[in-house]
Length: 195
Image 1 (tube, rainbow, N blue to C red):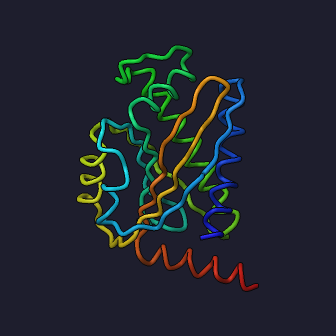
Image 2 (cartoon, rainbow, N blue to C red):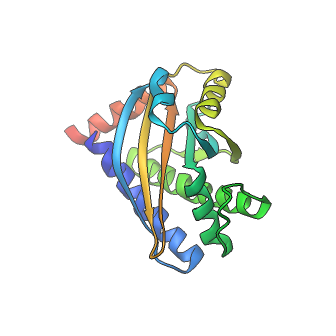
């Protein structure tokens, strides 16, 4: 778990730097909590409210290796989109420009995380083009799990906090890894710790 925390903090630092440059304002990002949970419990660990999710399939040296999901509850998604487009809409419904902004945030955050992971683990992991979903969190996750054609037992859940001078934004990054891919990453991390 310590290795995952280090990986998350490296990815968070990269993401925060890129997002800060994008909005020309300081954004800090932290990962206060990481859990490895059984896939059957994922729905219990996220809010059951309207949420915005940016979904990526894992590609590169690990084809069909899994999915990565940036999940932002309604208010957090509206705040994050507002920071990027310059106005905050309090109705929590994202319009086209705000959806585009959230897709860009997802690209930045997930790409930074995968870049840090690739550098650390020594194999290439790339995100697919993103898919944006606005739905009840539990329904969206259940639908994603139902569509998976791979064997996933556990999900890595990163609780994410983004802070700007004016806003606090919380969300989650969920990583659904195919069992073989999760074992490959765990073995590589054990080698790194031992060697």
